[in-house]
Image (cartoon, rainbow, N blue to C red; front, side):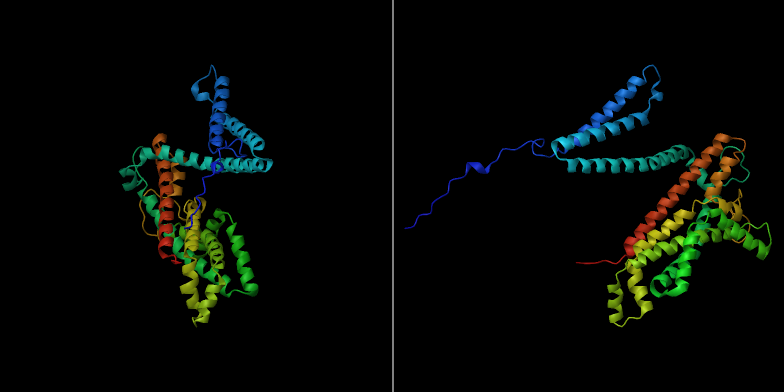
Length: 367
C-alpha cells in the first residue's frame, strides 16, 4: 500500500503588506489629497491678503494659480523622493497637460455660463412666437430671425454639400495631374478667405446681374455656401483617404464598377467622418454676421421668401439688438442674449442629429 505524503503549508507564502511609500509608488489618494491641500493653501494666502476688503474682492484667479503651482511642485517633489526621477518627470508632464486642458476649457465654460445666465430671462413663448415688427421697447421676439437662419443655412447646405462631396470624391478617386493640384490649391485658398469677402463677392455678382441695392435670403445662402464648400471638401477628402484600399480592391475583384464601389463601399465606410465634417462647416457659417449684413440685410418682419426682400437671421438679430436697442436698453440686451442662446441650442441640436445619423448609417463590423 502506497502512501502519499502531505506537504505542510509554507509559512513564507503570506508576505506582509508593504506601504505604498516604501514600495516605490505613491498611493492613489496622494495626488488628490495634495490637490486639496494646495487649494487650501491658495485660499488661505489670498484670504489673508483680502483682510479688510469685501468678499467680492477675493482673487479667485490668483488663488487658483498659487494652488496649481504648489500642487505641481509638491507632487513632483514627492514623486522624485518616493518613486524615481522618471516617474517625477511623467507626473510633471501630466500636471502640465491637465492644467493646459483646464485653461482651454475655462473660456468655453465661462462663455456658456454667461450666455445661459443672461439669455434665460427672455427664453419664453413670446420670444419664439413674435417678431420685432412695431416693437420699440419691451416684448417682441426672434421668430423671423430663427426662420431666416434655418432657411438660409439649409439652402447653403443643400448647395455646398453635394458640390463639396463630389469634389472630394474626384480628388481622391479620379483626380490626377495639374487639374487636381489646381483644385486643391484653390480650395486651400478659399478656406482662409475672410467671411466679409464672400459677402462682397455675392453682392458684386448680383449687382452686375440684377442691379445694385438687392438684398435677399438666397444671396445670403450663396455667401455662406462660398464659406462652406472648402470646409466640406477638405474634411470629406481626409475621410475618404482613410478608407483602406483593400476594401476597394476587394470590390473590384468581385467585378463591381468603380462608381458603384464608391457608392456602396467607400461612402458608407466614411459616412461618420463626412457627417462630422459637414456639421463643422454648418457650425462655421451659421453664426456669420458680416456676409449676411451685406447680402440678406435685416428686417423686423417675418419673410419666408428667399428670392424676395431682406431676411433676418439670428446673428444679425443679436447684432441689431446690441447696436440699436431702441427705447429700452435692458429689454434689447435680454433679446440679444436670448438670440445668442437660441443659436447655440440650434448648433447643439444639429450636431446631435448628425451624430445620430452617422451612428445609424455607419457600417456594422462584426467579429
